[in-house]
Length: 252
Length: 253
Image (cartoon, rainbow over all chains, first blue to last red):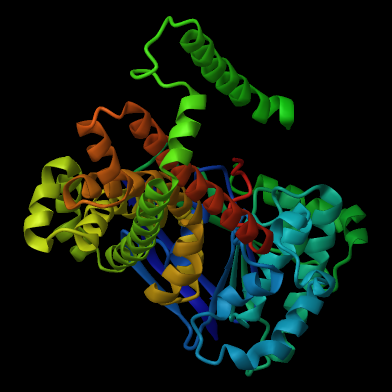
């Protein structure tokens, strides 16, 4: 079963294609990362998936139902709302806002924010703010979680910690879904090692700057590392080899 | 705090008033034309009752018109923000009327509304509503795109987006507009009182015909006092709101 399919999708700004004739399918429960050079349209593709940007041509098919959540690079918190109020934004559109208190508590505890439930964003560190942003996305119980370089601005220790937590959340998401499937995650990143550590499959945009009118070239890499991943994995030969493979992809 | 913020204006005050006092004492200036502070205090207490009644009237008119401008201005901005067609229909006229001096319209208001409070309030609202509408609209339109996208992803309705995101994000703009309007409301009230006859505006007009420049000065000081009082009240309200909700952390007064 597919969670989403992109069929010949293109995005054009002022006659210049950002990406052209992309085709991509993601199975239900997949963790897919997207890497590629700056300005190649990774983030725009994510926004098109979230339907906050329109396509120039092509079609996006989402499974039915498909609840979408989005984590921005910036935590995008509302400074006048406390942590609990901020995460509730993702369920503002739903009708049963008041019956969700238990779920809010669970989500806060999942991202270790329970002691900060009443804090305002300016009282939190960068890592904490990102946890709030993730909690907000999770409260919506998404089928498809879109993440746009969420850990790019964080220091390495926090980044590694959040990566492991994210994998754990992704793994456990099958317990809360009706069809016992994990949620899908599409994770845009600059870091090849991050992409390899997190995902089952990495999608690499190959720069099409020299041939702007040709369709965008995509390369895929299946990550055949153990599913249960901890930071010790980074030191293994398999992990480093996979990063090399990803780096070499499309260079020939 | 004292040396940075309070002392400099206090120094200017001392230099000006004591300088004037000195020049008056030496007979260099005509105290009828340039009354020193001591004479103004004398004038105030000799006609205390007249001043008190006029001050009360002007103060009530100004406060009422400021509250009305704020309520009406903000409501209109919210409507404009929700229905952009309405904004395009009405906003150009709001700008047009803003360019017409209130003193030219005030006589018309007397014809339509007669002498007294309705004319005075209309005149003041006419002047003070525009900064609130203009600032609120800029504020409502300047919400970060990323946050708007966020609300869009989660399918939040336009009305909820307005209430939960756009309006709170516009708070600093609305507050800035309110501060401008608090001064303009007093100006509008005085313009209305000139033609509709009451309060400090009327008292200034009467004093002018009697060549009582000292009375005019007392009225001016009282008017400035009303404006200052409004600003202090607004600052206090802003301070209390910020204790509860950090709307704009970069803003320093």
